[in-house]
Length: 343
Image 1 (cartoon, rainbow, N blue to C red):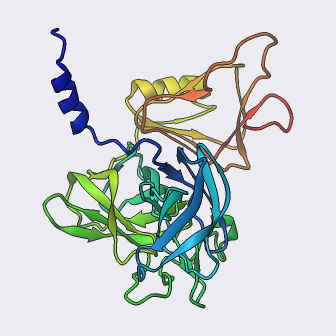
Image 2: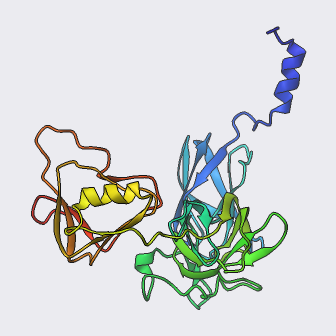
Image 3: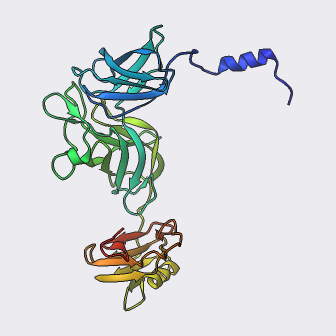
């Protein structure tokens, strides 16, 4: 490969967007954060930060200075002014030279992954199925007095949730919590949010949504004027998976647990009924399930599959239950051979 000339190197360097030398860079922010609480932002070049500025991005674009508490080369801690209301905060920092950092948005919904019901892989859902979204800052709820909070499930009233219809922050035109599937071709489908907390929500897909790939998932966490697409988060709507109902086996009369599993896997699916009682597995014996295999007990309090105690000096397997899915284990409790020790 020929050497590049100095002129070519200058052209290439000029085409790469770089921040100025010494300019602070913001990469990650702790969320959720409420007025009066301490926020942490990480990045680089932050040791000489003397000022934190934040602006409300969804309300009226008013700005205020945060109370700087601590700074190091890779992090800044500051307090959100207590007089502000919960909102998306656009945050920049600067040093004595006044050179601002890039802007980072605090309290925007941050999705880790999307699961679905019905035995479908992650990122897929059938019409009428339920999407389960896991992340941060997914739902802010009004307290009815003009402020709002992003609460974990354990702090929420009722059955570990706040009503999905709870209003968002008290601002003109604010929309309630909303989840949508947005088609690349234009149509948008609103999902029925049935459960929501700060770190997870569940929403039902309408039965009329066409089967298609690459819907964008859009979310309003209660702080936005409307649902906004989540960058890099797509959902495919597919036909529902039909669980096989035959063949059916019963542990005891037909086979032990391992043998029944082998029969169901060989049949490419089936139902294994496990009656009430304690059913033993050898130490470190792996229960291998396969597509369509359903291992169903008579109740989590009455059906136990018990592995024998670990032999001394033997390395355990990575997992005691494995297999390519979808497969199902329901209404039973796995446990070890030691009394009172369950897994």
